[in-house]
Each structure stands twice: as C-alpha cells, then as structure tokens.
Length: 59
Image (cartoon, rainbow, N blue to C red; front, side, top):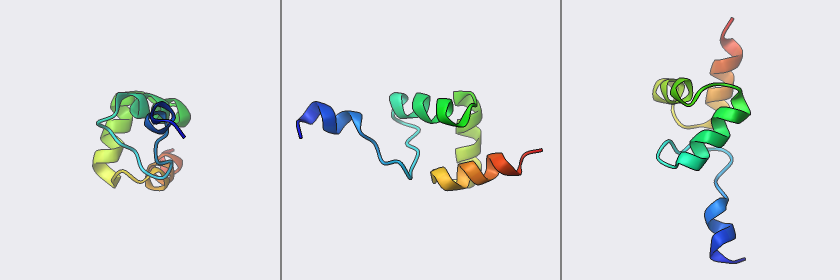
C-alpha cells in the first residue's frame, strides 16, 4: 500500500477533529454540520459509536 492511500484512510471507530477531511466525512455520514459534530464529540468523546448513540437519543 502506498503512502497516499494510507493517508486517505482513517480509523472508522474514532473521530479526529483535527483532520479536516475526517471531520467533513463524519459530518456527512451523520447528516449534521461540522460544528454540531464538534459539540457532540466534546460532550461524549471521539468514539463514532458514542456520537451515533447521542444522535439517536435526540428527539
């Protein structure tokens, strides 16, 4: 696997707010804004599962 491919891949179980491409991808996946994603990660941590659970709990 070359370096370019490795750089484009990210861990699917964690959300890295310091990587703009990841932030954009996760926000799109969850159907929320990047700002809302940041707030949720600050509240529940960077686990994608925890963020998903928080979003499902919203009315």
